Image (cartoon, rainbow, N blue to C red):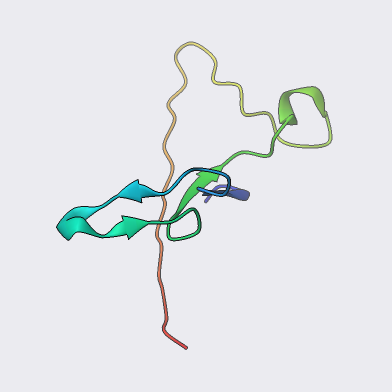
Length: 68
């Protein structure tokens, strides 16, 4: 239910050791994070992500992957 999906990669990172003596290169993994729109606190046309005292914050993150 978040308006953005941030994608992080390991680009630019050195090779790292993985399980079973495997090497993990800079493009063998990624991280996805559901998030609010960057800089939304400074943009009145975008809903504010600010949580006021007494407010409750809940979100849902449901990832579904399909092999092509």
